[in-house]
Length: 199
Image 1: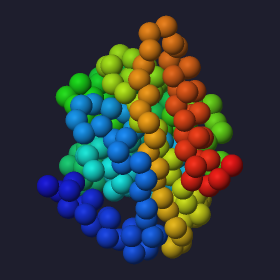
Image 2: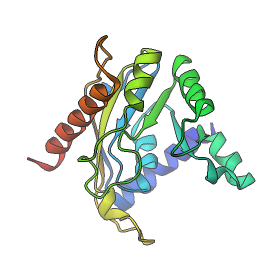
Image 3: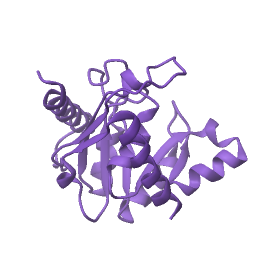
C-alpha cells in the first residue's frame, strides 16, 4: 500500500513538473519475474522507472545508505535492499534471485553508476548472469531527459520533459555468455534511444 501510494503521488508530481510520458507498457509482463534493465544518467532514474511501471519494482542500493535507521526502514518498505558495491556480494545476489523466483521485477542498470552519455559504456555481465540463473526475461528501457532535469554533481532539479520507453523482452539462450547478453541488452537500449531522440 505504501509503495502504491508513493507511486500515485509520483505520477501526479512528475506529470506536472516534467510532462512525464511512458511508451511501450505493453512489453511489461503481466506476471512472473523479470529484470528491467535501463540506462542510468541521474538520481531520478530509479524513481522514474517505479512510476512508469504498473508492477512493483525491486531495487538494489549501496549498503552505506542503510546506515541511517529511518532511511533503512523507508527503503525496505519500498522494495529496496542493500548491496556491497565493488565486491561479490553473495547475500545481495541471493536476495535478488529470491525475489525474481517469487515473481518479482528487479531493476538493474547494466552500466553500473550514472553516466553522462548513458548508453555508451561497457555493461557488467551481472544482468546476464541473473537472467540465466533464474530463467527470467529482461525488458530493456530507455529514460530520456533526466540528465537535463537533474544533472550529475548538481543540487537543483529543472522542469525538463522526461520520458520512459520500454522495449521487447530479451530471453536468455543457452550457449550465450553473460557478457554477450549484457551487450545485447545495451544494444536494445541504444535502439530505444534512437526511437526516443531520433538517430
